[in-house]
Amino acid sequence: MKSAFPFNPLYIAIALLGAGFGYNTYTIQTTNADLASTTAQLASTTAALEQKSLEISDGLYAAQQGVAAIQSRVGGFESTVTTLEKLSKTDPELLQKYSKVFFLNEHYAPARLAEIEPAYIYSDQRVEKINALVLPYLEDLLNAAKDDGVELFVKSAYRPFDEQSKLKSAYSVTYGAGTANQFSADQGYSEHQLGTTVDFISKGQGGALDGFEKTAGYEWLTKNAHKYGFTLSYPKDNAYYVFEPWHWRYVGVKLATYLNERGKYFYDLEQRKIDEYLVDLFE
Image (cartoon, helix red, strand yellow):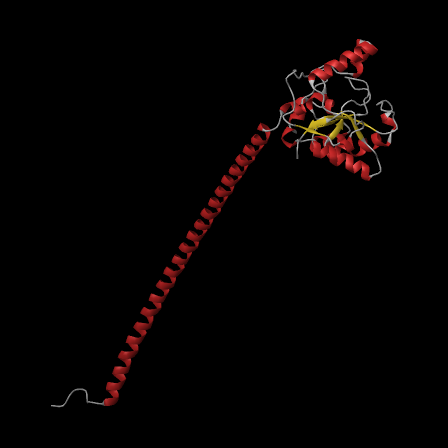
């Protein structure tokens, strides 16, 4: 019997081709859908990774800030420890106001005294001493003055309690107690007992301190003493003693410079302000 559809290779090829095209079309569509899904997943994953990266970055920044804060606190702590250590080794009396304000008892003396070299002393009849920590500053001052062609010498430096007592008694006998009180401190109130104070003199004064304000030495000191930590204790019209242009006290370079820049004197400041400079006294 003959088939209702005659066998024809061309028909068969066309049928197979149609079937293949349909399959390919289905495959392409499926692949495109898979690609779209994968792309969406990648985009989602990328966004998640970016978010996680931001979170990690924020976390690292916060951690860095935390470390910086800890370092700052540690640094502040170390600074405080250093400051306290310095203060524990610095005699607090050295920046106290004396001169009828605070009192040094008869047992007080600097922790360590050093002899001033004879070349710096006006008279070879007396050994002069000063606080050992102040000596380098004093020598630098005197050498700098000499380099500038100005001759300065130490007339008097450290005086202990009993020596000040004898000196004040002698002045009281010679000039009367009222007059002596105007230019000489009672024992226990003298800055000389601290070992940080010097009476300067220039040659040509006949050994007397009077007239020092007219010398090149005094002029040089008013311009330069602060660089070496010294300040004039008793300027004109002060509330304690007569004008003593020869009497200079070591208070540290920072405080002396502060006073010089502002046109102030040591006794112009409140004690609590002065105390702020104690830690830097020998720097």
